[in-house]
Image (cartoon, rainbow, N blue to C red):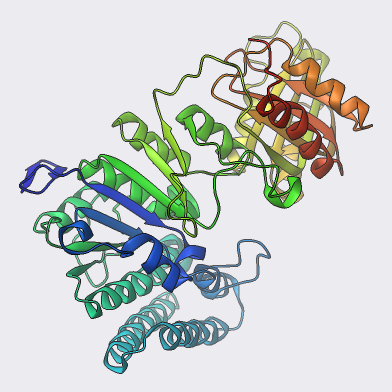
Length: 492
């Protein structure tokens, strides 16, 4: 049964079975056999296979090839198309993507007819993108048309190819097992009509009976206002959140290659960390602020406002319940749930005697950070000094400083690299927490530069001299998580 009201679609079967929306990340998607055995199929048969929706990311590494490498910044198809003087460099990169996609098909399909269908799909999409980019290049050879005006649209079209590939492949694999799977393509491929995100999702699910069909949905969705321009490469989680919200899901589940744990096991050790188990959306927001996203903050907002709990599960430990994030969890006891942070952040200190007693003295500085899209992790001020902690390349930070200096020529501006380690939890109101943390850092000769403890007390940030990040995470995890876990409860 499907009930539609404007852009809100509530989907349930005739028995009122609750619907769950899943999202599978790119690294997990690359482990096809594990995903099939642990997440999508497993030992389910018959009706148990349905009343679920899967939103999938591109296979690991594909989006890097299509756009640019997220870690190394190596140019992919889009970056070459947008900025290369070599008109054919992007074409060679696109051919490389096609070869990689076909190589993936060869690895995952044992049935030849399915592999041929998958290869034909890749060829049609890739050559369609190639033709479109060539045509756009030709049109922009005339002075009336500027390529820069179309680059965001180009970026979205190129990126969506990755999710279409993985979703189509997953549908073919499921059908080979006798499961009635549907490829739900939200990428807007060859569609003329512009829709909002909600309209596109509503239209895609209008005729799908999820009690009988298993939808496999592209993580990218074409929308009139553009997903990537607003959300960057977190667009697949925004699509996932919107699908859960629009079809009225009872729960949303993200499958990752790791647990949402009390610290990075690569730093602290796998034997010392543990899955968080239960937390709330406040904590999820703080994790995003530290670039350790459980979910994109705008995606979390949609789930939170609609009362949909989020579960983070490890793809490779299907029996483990994972971590549930909702808007009601409020533990009575003070405890740190996770220790994480930012390595190589930048401190920008602005001293200006003219700020004393001047209302709104920091507004122009904040405007400069916004102008160059520099993310402010935290900031503080006193009578004549404002200090900002940011995560951005130094090139961007220098541009901000130039603007501030121009507007405030008397200001003295200093910068330095720092590390920020944050203790985060739904309730960390212990009066001894900061004292315990600073004592532990002091005992291990880790230089502490500043402490930020907002009144709401869902996080406390420790600013450290550059180079002490890993040691600080280990020390604070021991002092604030492990000791608490072993019975030495922080004072409430």
